[in-house]
Length: 273
Image 1 (cartoon, rainbow, N blue to C red):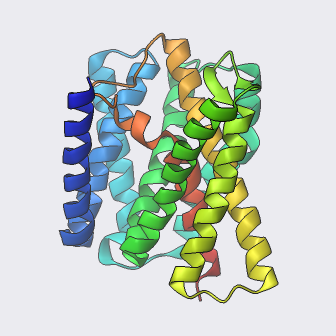
Image 2 (cartoon, one colour):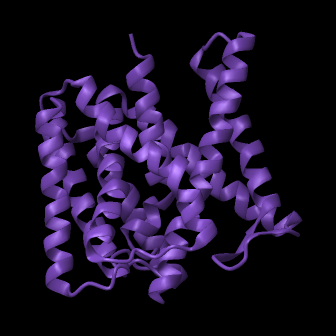
């Protein structure tokens, strides 16, 4: 298992590196469309759909993403702000207003229509954010993704070292409040170091805004993780699929990104001159 996990990680890193640095805009969009389609196929598994339905849904999400890329101008290397904002805000509203009560009450995906709608809200804005942020800067996309990676690593080690109070024992027994606190601290340090290295002027306003923003992103990343954990538990499965040996599936790798990247993209879109 460890060997498979390491080999898969190496392959994923190599593929992502090539895609990020060598692909032009259209090739990157095609790559993300494929990822979104596979994530949609996995989502159908969480919803308990038949294989034909899963394949059709995955293809449908890929088509929706392609349509958004064309209509928003992303396919041409530009951004139509109203269209992108609409897509990203749908995701933000879901994660900030609906995800917490969903977790607290342990709602299920329910009907096929609701499952399809929620899947689109989770997957499509994330994919759109990945296309938009990469178009702005590869470094920006990686920096945003690194927030989740730093949070995950810090939560794991701080939780193991200091974890006493369970965060959501009925959903993910291994997570603790101490792990969340450790993740927030680590992400704040990461953000400060990144700002210094990037030469950003650290005024009081920048420090306060950055600290609050990073804390919110970290908290929301945990919600994204818990949300997928709940769906997998309800579906009675350990991983969203076996596409990535030793790592589970696409959704297992992007669970926290689904709740964070749209927020980062929206902030960049609104704050950019």
